[in-house]
View (cartoon, rainbow over the protein chains, first blue to last red):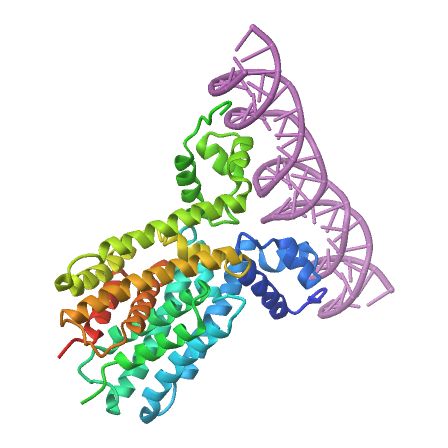
Length: 197
Length: 197
DNA sequence: CGCGTACTTGACGGGTCGGTCCAGAACTCC
DNA sequence: GGAGTTCTGGACCGACCCGTCAAGTACGCG
């Protein structure tokens, strides 16, 4: 009703995400987002309320997307579950290694910058990581059923360990560790997974 | 010579470190550091040059300290090397779990916030992590010599994996993951280390 | 067509930012 | 004691910060 919005909310969220991702929350100004999108600040505040609310909306979208990505990487038949897990770990390492700008992951950056002071960010980060852990655990159970992983292992604990390795690879990448070493971490982690038999 | 400095440089670095640690680089103002230390801004700039140089000095001190801590945790006779490694991993998880403010590690926060735009931060982060990895590898080799860890394993690769797990635990902690699960990660990682025999 | 409503724009406000500068204070050395 | 040097405190600079607001615009609906 009345005058319709002239901008695409999704495009604005994408632009805002890029700014927050690259400069951090405190390092990004609403003016920068306004000029990156061509919007006036009034429109920005009218649509998103405040800098913090805009960030949370960006963060939500980002978190949902990466959790979905993991879910889609790890879904499929049981006989390929172990292969999917290995491929996912290796792809994560390769992805971090390929990020030569060291931009890293917005979930990690946002949590690092804001978790001390913003419970909403903690809540969203935690939910996302737990969803990813659950996805990993599901795949691990499938690999156990198919006889690739030791069925005696606790799938949830293994999943949390794999998640820690994944987040660790990301942290090492941001600190400038070599691509080769990141890929070694992935391979070593895979080698140490408890195989069946 | 001439008029001597009235403040203790180390105390100022500590205060600045606390500010940067808690609020991040962009979120910390030189005015805040000045008023936290009681100094005038002239003294601050006279002694440290700029915000960025002050941060780098803080960062250097912090990095050196945590690398030293790891070295001191992991030094000792070969027959206790494996025990030291396990204790260190568990202590790291316990330490993160105890940090209920989710303040995390300044190395991780600094690298996350600044590595994209500041090569000096990348350099220092990387040097620190590689020093820690070397310390871990040394301890792992000792455990191999003493017959606790499989001598066929590549100590350097294992060390990098352990480092990734340690940084991953830190990342999970900042995202609000349960203390119990963090300690599970530590235990699971230790269980999966390749034992001798 | 005209009214009401929502959106757009950019100026504006009050505050803060990093950094500079200078007048005066405190010291060493001659 | 005077000259020279360094340090101190805070006023000050221009730029930028988040958020508001009023004036104008474009639409839906009767």
